[in-house]
Image (cartoon, protein in one colour):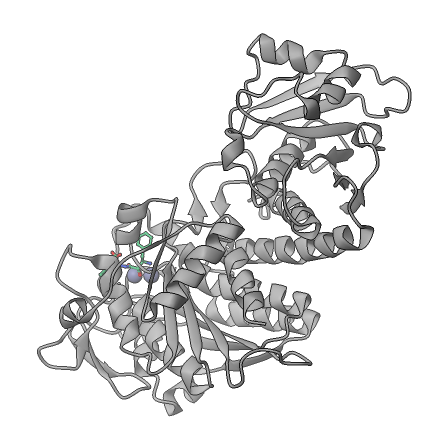
Length: 499
Ligand code: BES
Ligand code: ZN
Ligand code: ZN
């Protein structure tokens, strides 16, 4: 798709369709819509007075009119954006995505978008392009017929009076971020027979080659030597060997705090059967997405490589398959992690924390001073927060607050759950240092976090439980159902804010 910024008269854009956001309760005669209403011969007024279109979030209306004078488009799509007070720069991604998905189905090739958002030019353009690209992702990779049509091939974004250089910077950034989110989503959607830990590692290597990142893959022998008994206990029952994927971004000039290194660590369980503590058959297929945290790290590192911030970032992905087998770990087994702590494994389905234990310890050993781990860690977070908030916990309140605040700017919601000594006590084991589950049915999400915390030494650390937010069960106006690419936009902001 071709992306271009335009600054002249929006009504005269060289497009087949003009896409315009409309807010709830807005009057078509209002200053911003008046001229557009005029070129449609009053159609905006007419659909609004007939209450065919009210500006509610997700609503759409297609107006056809005969262009006159310098106007080229013959269609206008109105996109309802709900309350104006809730509309901000990041809403432009939803707006653009909704418009593109709507027009794709209607044989429209060239569209122009009027964002009507207040903010920095580059950010508006960035969200517009990112929303456009992420709206194009579909689950049809393995369909041989009935592929979704993608008709829109030229996308103009209009920003009144803006500098071309600012728009172009935003377009380039939006493309990098949108495509990286789609890479994460593509990985999360891959079936587990195709995306094994080995395949995940080679996809990461391929991406690293393309964008100029260093990529190192540690095999099981290396991990064994390093003492990663916790991680390896999860792959013990799988015919697929585990891989620890390490991606390194080093800036040409480092303007960050001296000695500071941010690590992004992801749970990459390519399939979670539960192991010997096997899951029920119903719904088990969803567990192909259990590598979403790892895929998030791969996508974010790709974006980082393209955006070239002036701070170093390391990505660590623990790619492992959790299977039952004669060699699988049993409930009651005791293993020793890389930091020397012993773990009594009481439920082999609480495997995410076991692989992250060694992965975060490795990140810190590599010099990380701040660590964010991402994981589809607990069913409990879905019960607590549904699909609207990512659970966040951490050992440093300022760091947690920073991520929550950046999330607000990125349009991603995080909700903090508490940690603390009293919770940590609940994973003390009778026979080893700690056990991998807490009391049945109690604070499941927090139990996962306090377990991982045991493997963080001095670093500031935040844990994102994305089990509820990494996958969308139904199609939305701006995006397909399935993997969402959650947290990437916030993590990019985190990286860039430490420059
Ligand atoms: N991958 C699952 C978490 C999960 C469960 C995500 C359901 C989405 C839907 C994780 O490995 C797991 O199985 N967690 C257990 C932990 C329990 C055994 C303490 C869970 O949440 O039930
Ligand atoms: Zn599990
Ligand atoms: Zn899992």
